[in-house]
Image (cartoon, rainbow, N blue to C red; front, side, top):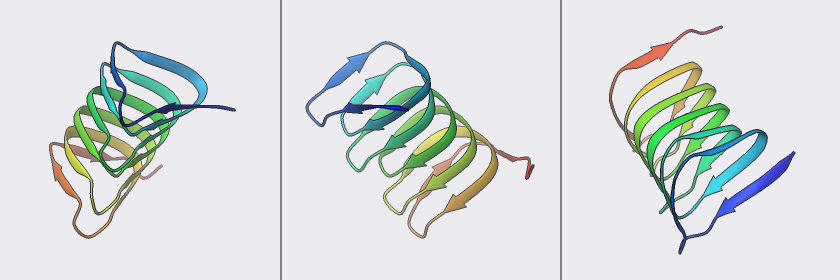
Length: 104
């Protein structure tokens, strides 16, 4: 499995796709992300739709989030509709949007 890191000083406009890729985002992405695993780090920002098997949010997300497993850390700021099989939210995480948890 390959890993892509979007550094703090990087801004990407456009879609990212890689079915076997892990994407760590410390910078800014404006566009859709489709990957095996997505980790929006503290200070990282995504404006777009995120689709992954696993997603962790420590930074900011605006758009939609679809993943089997979603973890919102205490620094997470999410304005998105979230669809997941499992959702874990830490104390301090903020979420504004619709939530659909299938539990499967």
